[in-house]
Length: 102
Image (cartoon, rainbow, N blue to C red; front, top):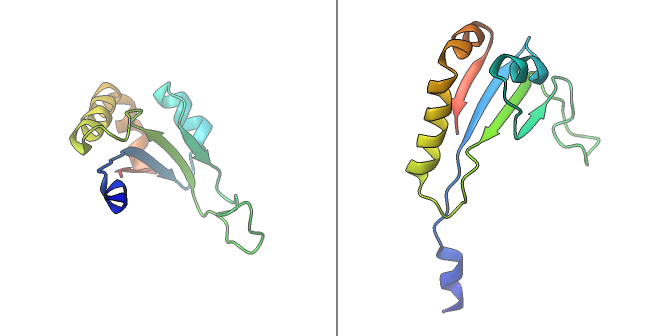
């Protein structure tokens, strides 16, 4: 049936680091990793909409890099492996950042 195409399973995973003080560039330098996406504090929430609000913190996002057909566990495992490899650097960032897996 045509409706079955919309029932395909997919998954994704991202590591998100949010900071009121450290810029995305500073986070990238600390982790020696470029983010998939980054947003500066004060930037527009929706650049195409001048009425949108602005970000109240810097945001650094690293996607798992896996295909969306991979199971969620694979995305989470990839991100945890990254966190484990960067554990010492992350400890330095944690006092001024929020770290989330989404």
